[in-house]
Image 1 (cartoon, rainbow, N blue to C red):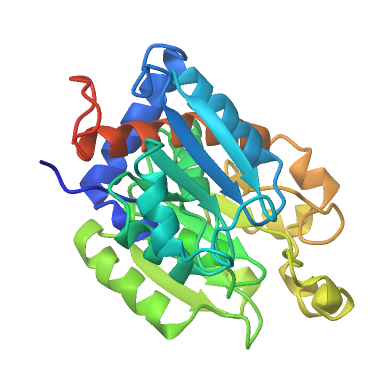
Image 2: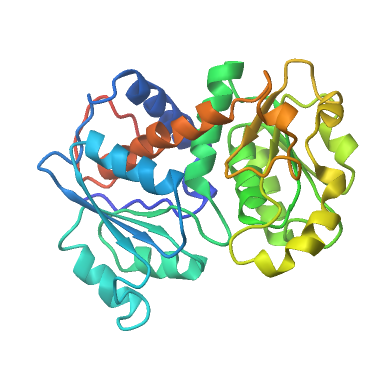
Length: 319
């Protein structure tokens, strides 16, 4: 029997596996209803401890398109993690559902769930990582640039958040040169940098961490940013708006990147802060392709994990 595969961080896929999941996502995008790993329908539990629009809709739609039935459970509607241990919840859920998707705060909760589950557990965002978003982003880069290997991807803004961590880890896994720029005190943790550098040795990618936004943008192929005020940081809003001003993706800043550079933003976006309206609504922006690709990417992740875990069969899915 195959060991159960989970997707908790961007490093849970090897470079070869990540490439195959991206191939699968492209195939699924071209054949929207052609893959049915959840035929039955089987149920997928989707827990939300944080509010969501794109994650909720993309998982709900994707599970249905895969022949399954999404069971969406909001914070406060279950006993998960407060009236019942995560381990006990996992042992109950594995007998009732085929996959567990969880958008939460602590990465440790996801790890506890996965350690006690015989069905795949997927991180739909935690305080530390957002790996599903990165599969969508890399799919978008492939669509607009043809490949990811050797491209330079520059992220500007809060470089200590979950998105920066995932851009580092998933980007180098895809063979990209990843530059992360943010102010002092808001840069990635040393453990994340070390893990990214180790992965880059396998792929030919590289890691650059800097406080110099202009240096990060120089000749970049892909420019990325994220909101400066994430969920739970609302009390810091005014201070953060001042702190990150030099890292705004504006038309002037984009002149430093390659002329044909594309712009990504995982949304929601705040025009006039981390990105100007001219850029996000301009010709270099591919943010709405990126948003749509959440569905295709997550369908590929769920399908690949089901097949790799021995819970579904499909000869078209390469492991």
